[in-house]
Image 1 (cartoon, one colour):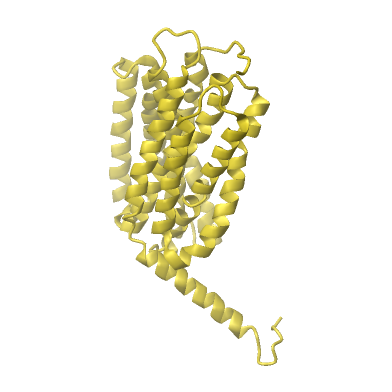
Image 2: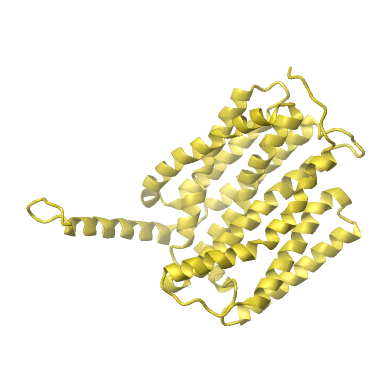
Length: 337
């Protein structure tokens, strides 16, 4: 049994989620920079700056996420939370309506009319919640539920990176052969299975066991990020690549902001009212189970992904590279400079 050290209350610990609205408000700024860089790189002239779209999107995301992140703390029926959620919904609705009508929108939402682009972004949005939620929950579990140090927490979660690096290499080879549907579906199913393993952890679970689970989580995660991003652009015209990249960034950043909000909601709801200590062990286990369910549902949806165009685009790219390589090798076998 580990020696337990005094720790702050759950409410104070989980107050970190106040940064979530700020993160969401910055999403549109990140999108602008990302889109501008991509536009210039593709040789296109940037359009007129959409200030109205920026203000509506940033304010709407910030207000909505403030309501989501503060709901567990202030109560979902509190005036501040209800006002923030309502204001966010109104502003985001106005942002969508405006950007569907304007000629040069900040976010070209019309691209979501393409099913492959829409489905891959939906997978990114929802699928990032269990993935990043587990990354957020792991250090809390190690330090609060098990009483470990920050150093032990850091060394307990880093093996995930090695798992991601391993799978990304394999996914890159298999992408053109089997398509993103199977890779992403299996990746999310693996994430769900590993999260169930995490839910079995208790105060006596060894650090090396936790590290092994983190490595397996990374292995599963590696089958999600690259294939969804590449597949999302399969049907996008070259002139729309900058806007598509911008929307991908917005979706990923929003999913990343929702992850800690979802985790803290479960932890706070699982903590007895007025508790002076951290959430009980059962709250952490429930959080892992909730994340596992989200990953499983997203995996089922991923297996319906219409990835025919993505496979065709990948195969065409492979043939073009092979043809280019063949043209660079003359009959005498000496490669051209």
